[in-house]
Length: 172
Image 1 (cartoon, helix red, strand yellow):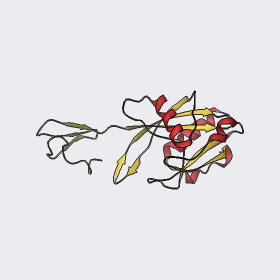
Image 2 (tube, rainbow, N blue to C red):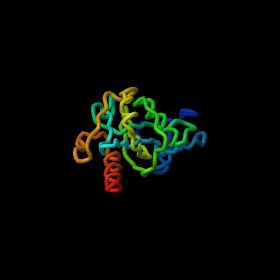
Image 3 (cartoon, one colour):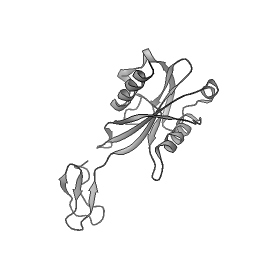
Image 4 (cartoon, rainbow, N blue to C red):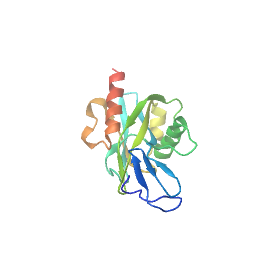
């Protein structure tokens, strides 16, 4: 990020790297903090113990499998964000997502390597909801995979792999 963000958004002067977390403008005193970007994801499991994945429609990692989720909007709590993302991407409403944990990754997008802090949730979904599922928004297609046949090599991001491993340990 420090290579891409070189000029102050306030006065356009050159930014200096103060440390690994801050870019400073000596002209106007602006501080650009290099903080993680908050995201959410959810592990949705059906009654057969299979986990739902969506195939990514866009870069980065177009064509790879991912968990439903996305970026948290401004003024939005993580719990509301995951409900919104599931509605946008799958066309269903979830009611009681439970929190699994936070996971860190890198998200390369247009020459910038963002660092998401992904808050991962989980929920079991009913057959009634499964019948209403449809791939939408930035999801090309959806598929349930048995826990012993998760396509690990074709998962989009390492944080998702880590979250799935933690989830699988917790449900044994």
